[in-house]
Amino acid sequence: MNKGYIQIYTGNGKGKTTASLGLALRALGAGLKVYIAQFVKGQEYSEIKMLRKFEPELVIRQYGSECFIYKDPEPVDFELAQKGWKEVGEIVHSDRYDLIILDEINIALYYHLISEESVIDLLVNKPLKTEIVLTGRKMPSSLFDYADLITNMEEVKHYYQKGIQAREGIEY
Image (cartoon, rainbow, N blue to C red):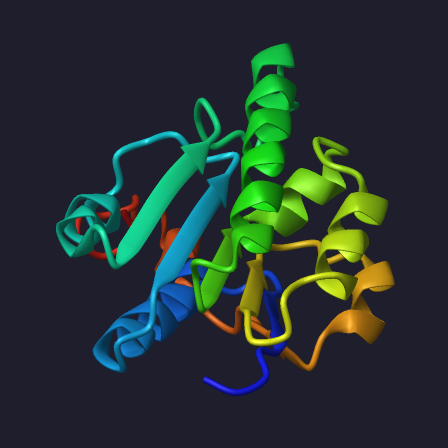
């Protein structure tokens, strides 16, 4: 692998995590090693069950108690995010992984679970070959200049608006 870039998937539309997981599968198919850190998530989603089958080429860790997108974080959310951020720093600088996905990091930043300065420092000082993907709504504008690719997922229409609940195997 040559130079690793910084990608951000953000916006209010569905598909940010899904896009990053598709990239993870593509990387695995090319023989790359992948690390996925999920912030603010602690549930055993369907994709987590499947991705664990790819270990040790793909490692996934969750640093959240539950998804709190619609409520304020609790002290445990801060603790888990800080623990995860420390581990992510070690992982990035270990140079063991070609692709590192920081899922929902933008939400962790929005709620100040992790400092923007520490994320910027990590992006600036990452190993040259490491590709890093950041996902989540509410991307801080401070990250814009550090990204090589930004995709904004726009919600145009969603069946949630008709009261349809999340479905196993599709949304979780």
